[in-house]
Amino acid sequence: MPKSPKARSGRVPFTKQASEVIKVSDIILEILDARFIEESRIAEKEEEIKKQKKILIHVLNKADLLPPKQVLQTRGLSNPILISTKTKQGISKLRDEIMILARRFYGQNQIYVGVIGYPNSGKSSLLNLLARRGAAPVSSQPGFTKGIRKIRLAKGIILLDTPGIVPINENLFSENQVKHGLLGVQIPENVRNPDMIVSELMKLYPEKLEKHYKISADGDVEVLLDEIGKELRMMKKGNEVDSERVARKILKDWQTGKMRL
Image (cartoon, rainbow, N blue to C red; front, top):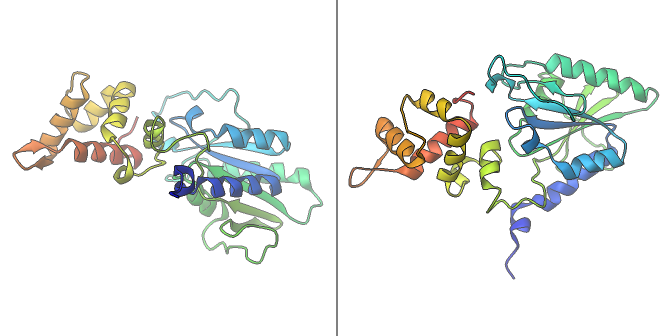
């Protein structure tokens, strides 16, 4: 019998690992995309955190990709901190906040800080920055599923990383592909119908696309792909623009931060 999309994607075991980390952690860091805050929140895991009365810190990554004067709407977020794993903005502030909150658990032998988020949200980069270079992974910790990365942040404080998770109710192969493409859950090479995601980008940020590629597309995604394809000389046989290749190029520029807001 063929496996279901959920089984193929590995999301179920990864979701279970995230639940395990939430269960054993005292503090949880949920990594969000500062450009798409609400879209990158994982409601089912936040509910688990709330029910277990754990401390939650919403970490808003990719601050370097925001316009300088943009005001973020952080109402409803828990202890929101804006950071960039690329420029290291906000890392010291986040580390200090963790140390302050950790004092609530004075007397415990170990304090665990779990890190959760969508794939490619910057979790591993954040852990390395928080723990600083040369921090040794913690091994031989009993009671944890294999695959959960453990790093010492400070004496008595352990960071727990998990693989990126996609909520169980989100289908990778249909209606959520635009959202996942924008968040970087799927890399451009694996995205289906990349033109759909570029079309959504055009609705959200038409002036940014036109400014970045120095073209005018009149609000039509086909015209946009055609103009950029000609400019970048991405052609197929018969001297036609390779629209799919162009769409993947645009998506890659977006995901890697070459195209700024």
